[in-house]
Length: 162
Image (cartoon, rainbow, N blue to C red):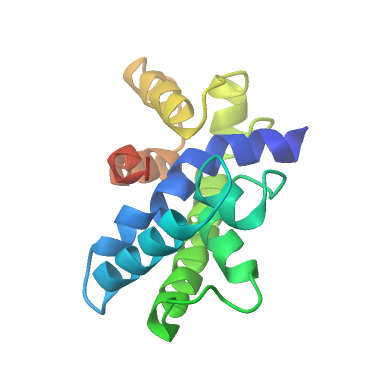
Protein backbone atom coordinates (compact mmCIF):
# COMPACT_ATOMS: atom_id res chain seq x y z
CA UNK A 1 0.00 0.00 0.00
CA UNK A 2 2.84 2.39 0.79
CA UNK A 3 4.37 2.04 -2.65
CA UNK A 4 1.06 2.44 -4.43
CA UNK A 5 0.22 5.54 -2.35
CA UNK A 6 3.57 7.04 -3.31
CA UNK A 7 2.96 6.18 -6.97
CA UNK A 8 -0.46 7.82 -6.78
CA UNK A 9 1.16 10.81 -5.13
CA UNK A 10 3.79 11.50 -7.75
CA UNK A 11 1.99 10.09 -10.79
CA UNK A 12 0.27 13.28 -11.96
CA UNK A 13 3.43 15.37 -11.94
CA UNK A 14 5.52 12.58 -13.36
CA UNK A 15 3.00 12.02 -16.12
CA UNK A 16 3.14 15.72 -16.83
CA UNK A 17 6.90 15.48 -17.20
CA UNK A 18 6.62 12.83 -19.89
CA UNK A 19 3.35 13.75 -21.48
CA UNK A 20 3.48 14.33 -25.19
CA UNK A 21 3.18 18.13 -25.06
CA UNK A 22 6.07 18.37 -22.62
CA UNK A 23 8.32 17.08 -25.37
CA UNK A 24 7.46 20.12 -27.46
CA UNK A 25 9.56 22.42 -25.28
CA UNK A 26 13.26 23.06 -25.64
CA UNK A 27 15.85 22.50 -28.34
CA UNK A 28 16.87 19.31 -30.04
CA UNK A 29 13.85 18.11 -31.94
CA UNK A 30 11.48 17.52 -29.03
CA UNK A 31 8.66 19.05 -31.10
CA UNK A 32 9.29 16.42 -33.76
CA UNK A 33 9.16 13.76 -31.05
CA UNK A 34 5.79 15.06 -29.92
CA UNK A 35 4.50 14.75 -33.47
CA UNK A 36 5.92 11.23 -33.78
CA UNK A 37 4.22 10.09 -30.56
CA UNK A 38 0.93 11.75 -31.46
CA UNK A 39 0.99 9.95 -34.83
CA UNK A 40 1.77 6.60 -33.18
CA UNK A 41 -1.03 7.10 -30.62
CA UNK A 42 -3.50 8.15 -33.32
CA UNK A 43 -2.69 5.09 -35.42
CA UNK A 44 -2.98 2.66 -32.50
CA UNK A 45 -6.12 0.57 -32.33
CA UNK A 46 -8.11 -0.16 -29.23
CA UNK A 47 -9.81 1.95 -26.65
CA UNK A 48 -8.58 4.19 -23.88
CA UNK A 49 -5.57 6.44 -23.71
CA UNK A 50 -2.36 6.02 -25.68
CA UNK A 51 -0.78 3.72 -23.08
CA UNK A 52 -3.81 1.40 -23.11
CA UNK A 53 -3.86 1.35 -26.90
CA UNK A 54 -0.14 0.64 -27.26
CA UNK A 55 0.60 -1.56 -24.26
CA UNK A 56 -2.77 -2.83 -23.08
CA UNK A 57 -5.13 -1.89 -20.28
CA UNK A 58 -3.10 -3.73 -17.63
CA UNK A 59 0.17 -1.89 -18.34
CA UNK A 60 1.31 -0.30 -15.06
CA UNK A 61 0.20 3.28 -14.65
CA UNK A 62 2.13 5.81 -12.65
CA UNK A 63 5.18 7.94 -13.16
CA UNK A 64 6.31 7.93 -16.77
CA UNK A 65 3.68 5.47 -17.98
CA UNK A 66 3.74 6.78 -21.56
CA UNK A 67 7.53 6.72 -21.82
CA UNK A 68 7.71 3.33 -20.09
CA UNK A 69 5.10 1.91 -22.45
CA UNK A 70 6.75 3.18 -25.61
CA UNK A 71 10.23 2.14 -24.48
CA UNK A 72 8.95 -1.36 -23.57
CA UNK A 73 7.79 -2.07 -27.12
CA UNK A 74 10.11 -4.32 -29.10
CA UNK A 75 10.76 -3.32 -31.76
CA UNK A 76 10.05 0.36 -31.13
CA UNK A 77 6.97 1.67 -32.94
CA UNK A 78 7.44 2.55 -36.60
CA UNK A 79 7.94 6.27 -37.04
CA UNK A 80 9.77 6.76 -33.73
CA UNK A 81 13.18 8.27 -34.35
CA UNK A 82 16.36 7.51 -32.36
CA UNK A 83 16.26 11.13 -31.15
CA UNK A 84 12.75 10.64 -29.78
CA UNK A 85 13.79 7.42 -28.03
CA UNK A 86 16.65 9.31 -26.41
CA UNK A 87 14.27 12.09 -25.34
CA UNK A 88 11.96 9.54 -23.70
CA UNK A 89 14.87 7.95 -21.84
CA UNK A 90 15.97 11.40 -20.67
CA UNK A 91 12.45 12.13 -19.42
CA UNK A 92 12.48 8.87 -17.45
CA UNK A 93 15.73 9.98 -15.81
CA UNK A 94 14.17 13.35 -14.91
CA UNK A 95 11.16 11.60 -13.36
CA UNK A 96 13.39 9.37 -11.27
CA UNK A 97 15.43 12.38 -10.14
CA UNK A 98 12.30 14.35 -9.23
CA UNK A 99 10.86 11.41 -7.28
CA UNK A 100 14.08 11.05 -5.33
CA UNK A 101 14.29 14.79 -4.69
CA UNK A 102 10.70 14.98 -3.55
CA UNK A 103 10.96 11.96 -1.29
CA UNK A 104 14.24 13.20 0.21
CA UNK A 105 12.90 16.73 0.75
CA UNK A 106 9.29 16.10 1.78
CA UNK A 107 9.01 12.43 2.69
CA UNK A 108 6.32 9.91 1.85
CA UNK A 109 2.77 9.24 3.00
CA UNK A 110 4.23 7.68 6.14
CA UNK A 111 7.28 9.86 6.82
CA UNK A 112 8.59 13.40 6.78
CA UNK A 113 6.46 16.43 6.06
CA UNK A 114 4.09 14.51 3.79
CA UNK A 115 3.46 11.90 6.48
CA UNK A 116 3.10 14.50 9.22
CA UNK A 117 0.80 16.97 7.47
CA UNK A 118 -0.60 15.27 4.38
CA UNK A 119 -0.38 11.49 4.80
CA UNK A 120 -4.11 11.01 4.35
CA UNK A 121 -4.55 13.33 1.37
CA UNK A 122 -6.02 11.73 -1.74
CA UNK A 123 -6.10 13.15 -5.23
CA UNK A 124 -2.49 12.84 -6.27
CA UNK A 125 0.45 15.18 -6.39
CA UNK A 126 -1.39 18.45 -6.84
CA UNK A 127 -3.55 17.77 -3.79
CA UNK A 128 -0.56 16.83 -1.66
CA UNK A 129 1.43 19.86 -2.81
CA UNK A 130 -1.58 22.06 -2.03
CA UNK A 131 -1.74 20.47 1.42
CA UNK A 132 1.97 21.07 2.03
CA UNK A 133 1.65 24.68 0.87
CA UNK A 134 -1.26 25.12 3.28
CA UNK A 135 0.90 23.69 6.07
CA UNK A 136 3.52 26.35 5.26
CA UNK A 137 0.84 29.06 5.20
CA UNK A 138 -0.39 27.80 8.58
CA UNK A 139 3.16 28.26 9.94
CA UNK A 140 3.66 24.55 10.52
CA UNK A 141 7.32 23.56 10.70
CA UNK A 142 7.66 22.20 7.16
CA UNK A 143 11.33 21.49 6.48
CA UNK A 144 13.35 24.06 4.55
CA UNK A 145 14.22 21.48 1.88
CA UNK A 146 10.56 20.69 1.29
CA UNK A 147 9.68 24.39 1.20
CA UNK A 148 12.41 24.95 -1.41
CA UNK A 149 11.06 22.10 -3.56
CA UNK A 150 7.52 23.50 -3.25
CA UNK A 151 8.78 26.91 -4.36
CA UNK A 152 10.27 25.33 -7.50
CA UNK A 153 7.05 23.50 -8.39
CA UNK A 154 4.85 25.65 -10.58
CA UNK A 155 2.29 23.02 -11.45
CA UNK A 156 2.68 21.14 -14.72
CA UNK A 157 -0.83 19.83 -15.16
CA UNK A 158 -1.30 22.13 -18.17
CA UNK A 159 1.23 19.95 -19.99
CA UNK A 160 -0.74 16.74 -19.64
CA UNK A 161 -1.91 15.02 -22.75
CA UNK A 162 -5.68 14.67 -23.01
